[in-house]
Amino acid sequence: MVAVNPEGTIVQVNSQTEHLFGYTQGELIGQKVEMLVPVSVRGRHDQHRVRFHGQPQTRRMGAALDLRGRRKDGSEFPVEISLSPLKTEGGMVVLSAIRDITDRKRIEEELRKAHEELSARKDRELWEQRNRLALIVDSSQDAIIGKDLNGIITHWNKGAEQVYGYTAREVIGRSISILAPEDRHDEIPDILAKIRVGQRVDFFETVRVRNDGQRLNVSISVSPIRDSSGEIVGASAIARDVTAQKRSEELLRQAQKMEAVGRLAGGVAHDFNNILGIVTSCCELLRSRTPSEGASQYIENIQEASKRGSALTRQLLAFSRRQMTLQPRLLDLNDSLKEVVKLLRPLMGDDVQVTLRQGTESAIIEADPSQLDQVIMNIAVNARDAMPKGGKLILETSIQEFDSALAERHPPLKPGRHVLLAISDTGIGMDPVTMSKIFDPFFTTKEIGRGTGLGLATVYGIVKHAAGHILVYSEVGRGTTFKIYLPAADHKLGFTPKPGVEALPPKAQGETVLLVEDDALMRSVTRQMLEDHGYRVLDAEDGNAALERLHANGEVQLVLTDVVMRGMSGPELATRIVSAYPSTKILFMSGYTGELLDQAEGLKSGIPLLEKPFTRAALLNTMYSALH
Image 1: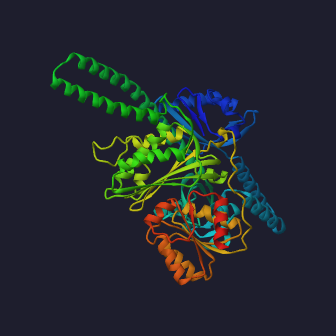
Image 2 (image 1 turned 120 degrees about the vertical axis):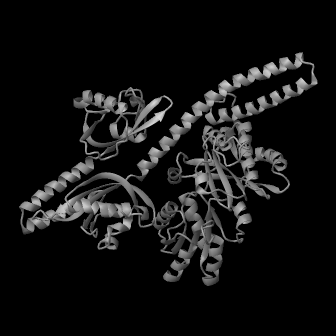
């Protein structure tokens, strides 16, 4: 990923660019992008770049262009490049996604040579070359799929197994449409219609579905297959999983958006502060020179409005991370919460119960106490509005050890020891659309005059400024939990605490586990961790499907189920399982905290709860304890 400004200067690259071209980030940023282009075409590239900036438009991967990149050592390699123009405060930036297609070119060349050799040789040589061709195809990490003109799968390589999760035995003889989501079923007939008349479908990006229900972003090309007489008898498709690349592009766009809004907010706040300073000073001078009682009331109104404006600018500055009065220091979050709770109880009202649960003796972090208080207050105010008939606000602390695998699933979270502050309410909850926008500046669900839309944006800015991470779990009618992870700072007090127990339990001996999780990606990742440790895993997307799997598969040693699911909840499912299969163990998992679930779901004591996000070691150790 390479971002280039209108002058052709590189302004940002990702770590994969360093690996691909051999330069460090420092060697690239500030240099002309032509340094990554072969010397023979640099002159023409400058003209192409100027024309693109004159008429910018998105160019997707696979634009049928023969492009090459140049490494630091002078070597060249074939590439595919997509171009995406992005408007920023400093002008248009072109975001280039560069893919090394050396392996694909090699495979295509090998396939071409093998086809020529197959045409020239007879029985024995033909058989040998077919084996060689099969080895070449199976060595590719891309999915290479053969199908007839009706879309029936005839060939399925190892790469296809890895990308889509089906084995060759499971799919050969079935329609290729099993890979298309319901909203894209019309794509495959259109592609086959083009193949029948000899057209090639060059690389295009679309969505496909894995065996476990997970949706993938893929880049696909499809070519006709001809027999010895030249008649079209089928199609060959090459697909590459680009889900991670799309996620990186989206994260970069989101980061750029937040950065641009932050710069704007910070600039406005500084200018507005100067104006408010003048207004406040003039009010003080006017008060000393105006004896009229009526005028005094107006002056007080002006001063009160100025105070409200100052509070708003402080929120803007906190969001933009340009507030210069930060005073971070070492503090114990447990002690801080005891004082904050005293302020929260009158703020929340008599009909809201405020509970503090400290899951660790000490929770040492490095933060600005006033900003930490602001984070808690902003979330608490929203929680109060979400509980118009009263309820419960729960603050919990604990220590979390994150491994690299879990950190990769929740970027930009880093591995290591963290202090967790969980703030939960039993309010009305949020739907997915609302939850996706809650940290956007000026987004609010409150009526006009009751909210600025900066409360949670400020929370986001403060947490990120403290090198922390924030996750949100919520469903309509189920309440909301904010989980704030801040780097532990015990080592700055002169001692290093013992790390949490991360040793893995003994390998499973084929015990059967039923995994019930409505999030397809979470279900896929959890299943992989369990299978790698020796468990036999059945999975289901909801309670009804889980009961069907239980009835069809007989003995299951343990059911690992999410608590909050659409339709039948985890506790309801557990009740029915215990009644029908009393020997089956139950283990709950949830993004909500145990304290909140005890209130909202009425979980039975004795059933353990695994809180999300969890590490591989936490999952396997909890599973082992539940089974033994």
